[in-house]
Length: 386
Image (cartoon, rainbow, N blue to C red; front, side):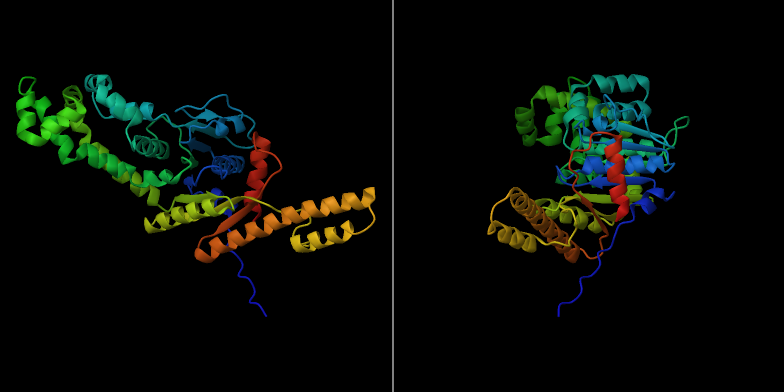
């Protein structure tokens, strides 16, 4: 006799999004697994349950805007029309604009203008490694704790970039804070404080022979831009570190929930394992796993792939007729779908065996892509059905 299969722990989506204590949901996963659609469906279902919800995407793809009937998304929440009994807003991160908002909020207008005009700042705010993740957390912090006069949100859903780097936001705030507050960057600020003519002298005194190599690689003009930028931003150093630590604490609060999204494929589930292990290691509040696009044949598991193939073979031995040929073709199609479904189920069980404490939801594949609110509602219903 074989031991009975252990029932997989199910993630109760409606309980999660309906709980007033849940204020932030972060979806993460590899590319092409339906993560953006899952985030949008969760946000729509929460909004239509009566919660004032905003969904923030860091993914520059336009799928979220299209599925919600919006022509574009930007750094400002835009309301989605057609939401029943609730209000839903959507936005896409503009990291440079967000960085500009941070600078403007924590410096005088004159100093902010100096920073905005600095070439190094212009590069840092638009393309520096880690800036996107840091600014995503800045925006999340602004949404979670809006300034006076701005509306509050019952629920914030964050759709992260489609790669392993999506979890870089866990340490990007500290990394950028360390960079701006580090010893090296403070030494770069010394020349600007010493004045123009003393630039080379102070730089040489600070770095010795290394300064010649740095200047040769980066160029003296860039070093001057960096120095001037750091000097202008010096008053904000403490603020960067303080906000970085605050954002990290925000992600670890009980009011935050991480949902990992995957498809029933080896590579996607390996990525999901990485996400789960990283979140658990960081002691982040992991809600569970959503496995999208499972193959499920009509009739469920009543007719296995092997039985369907055997039945098709028997029909193939009979005298050909339209009815027989049609039945044989239908059985072979069913066998293919059933085999894919059985493989998907094995993949899910394998993940569950490796991570027995992770609740999960299996969402069947739809015959067409989701491109509107009706499709998102259906995904929401499937998420809540498990």
